[in-house]
Image (cartoon, rainbow, N blue to C red):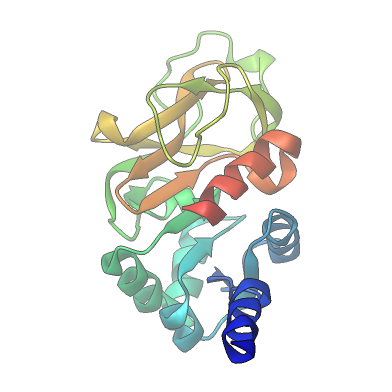
Amino acid sequence: MLRFFREVLRERFVETEKPMIAIVDYGMANLRSVEKALQRVGGDAKITSDPDVIARAEKVVLPGVGAFCAAMSNLQRSGLQEAVMQHIRSGKPFLGICLGLQMLFEESTEMGTTSGLGVLPGRVRAFFEDGGYSDVSRLKVPHIGWNALHLTRPSKLLCGLQEGDRVYFVHSYFPCPADPSVVIATSTYGEEFCCAVEKENVAATQFHPEKSGAVGLRILQNFVNW
């Protein structure tokens, strides 16, 4: 009987191991802020440039800031591109942030045309590239600051958010998905643009959830719980 109670107590109080979240380090992101934000909401987040660690991870985050072509070059040269693609193909949860969203698409027009990962059909273009806003002189590019979200459909990543919640952006380019059904949120800066996508196990944001206060933490909490 005593042995039975010992086993019950051991099962009750032994801490359950948290699924590891790999933050991909390919040399183009402020990784510490992403790591700290994920840890704050209970995620076991680790920054890594090791493909084997990424392969073992339960979830993967691909952040990024800077030029699309340089990011794709770094990802390929580091040997991390295939590790990221294998994770996505495995069906395990994946989150792209800012440039990490853009790289999911087929190509970007930044500094010429550069091929992306091709996970989602569509291209990445600059603000006002298509002449859709008549008074461009009033708006500075890059777009930096807080903007409201328009939620286009229910999603796992944005669960619990409200229409008009504000998040923080720093970008000059944004994706134009060929499949509108992947878009889960848009925002407006002179023109309406896609700022969050979700398809099966893949989700991504153009804004920075790690810099978006309570709203951003809720998004990261949703990813940790996915």
